[in-house]
Length: 200
Image (cartoon, rainbow, N blue to C red; front, top):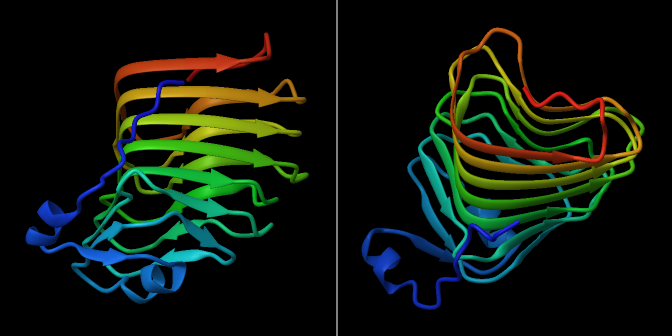
């Protein structure tokens, strides 16, 4: 999968736009206030849940990684209008979800996600309980059980240029799942190892 992120070597432009530089996971967690604009200057190692409960937050990864290895950790988004941009998200723990957004206005742009789990429950890489926007996103998920790449909620989900590679020992693989919400798709590729996979 071609990378969607670019390393930012000089953050001065973002600083002029009001972004705060963060270097550690503690810096990141302590910077999550309302209306925060954050740029990562290093790869971040998380050993707990990243709980984004405040609103109107932009996190620009600067091309760096958020690495999650704790078995039950994930990125939990309950605040409104949260944007994650230009980053790699790597998850090698047992959690069955890597991003769980429960509020409106979630935006994911120029992001690569690598999600490898051995959890015994169903794997859902991204859950959008109230819809959101995915733009230029790569998902690479490996699981021993069934997979849903993106599980959309009740509100509208906008998808532009989404690539998924879903690999599982289970025959039940779904690329995108939605029960009630509308989905607007412009450019999608889904690769699986199962003949019984469902794209959408």
